Length: 416
Image 1 (spheres, rainbow, N blue to C red):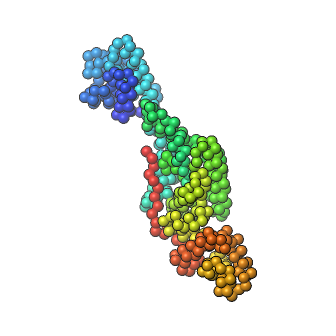
Image 2: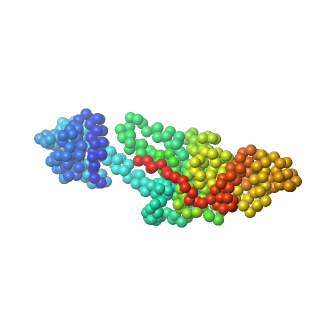
Image 3: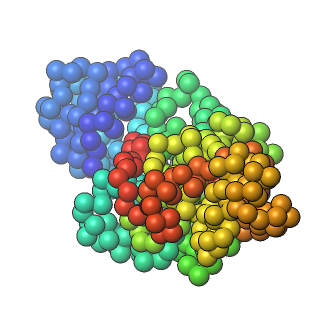
């Protein structure tokens, strides 16, 4: 570890403010990195060089910065020295105080530099996977994932959890008068993130192939692995676990967090689309129904169609709503006719040349297959939007929407 100018300035500012003395910090070569006298920065200090060489205090009243020089150590090695402009008996005692404080600052600032690096690379990879603009260099993403032991061939979907109110409230415990506010805040944030991840894993049944990454102070993204033969079962399992997790957070911390769940799409490139869906479900659901819940696009009613500018997501929602009817052309025709008839059973039955009881049976079957009863306003609105979208995007009305529909997906940059 080498002392740098930022650490040296932090030491000088803190020690000078606390002891009201002339202070200087030098590196392992005896060069002044920071001083209360800016004119001395960059000069060599012989007494400090001797203190570093001997590993003991050296006093010198004839030098540029007269006073006592004490070696500074980190991890058992001498990394520099601090010079306090006072050679009185009291100054010798204060010198030891200054040395202890300086070494504490060195330790804290070194820890804060290293802590983010432990998770930063993984967080950065997750952010890049969710940002289509990064997909122009897939070989880089694949290589980084391999180095981190992440198999991108595993099918996954995206979950976005917003801890905003909770994180903000917990960070308020950092005292404004703290002498090292940036370091203390970063350490506290790392602690909060670690605790949230541990609690999440204890409540929501994890999969060894799940990938976690914080996009910023507030948002945690989970790339949740699933069985492609039964993708919906994993989504439902996680949604239930997430709701228990959010309820537990609200009870323990009295602050609401919210979550959004995207769909699974084949291929790692489609994680970006799943993230758009999860973020949209989170933002729209929390705005309409309040925080503290898990939201999925298909559970938002018409809001899933009208509260997003992602055409790909709307087309996907339309396809998923109508997909259960793809093998039932008679039911599809019945649904379209019923919708065009302004939900009038008699008008629809007459247009279809069937008995009203037959129409009721078919409508019951549509409700059973799609989970949407077209005789109710909200369900009818969703099914009508789905029919119109699918017809507009696919006149053949049967195929799945293309996964590469033009859109722009991006993720906010990682926090410092």
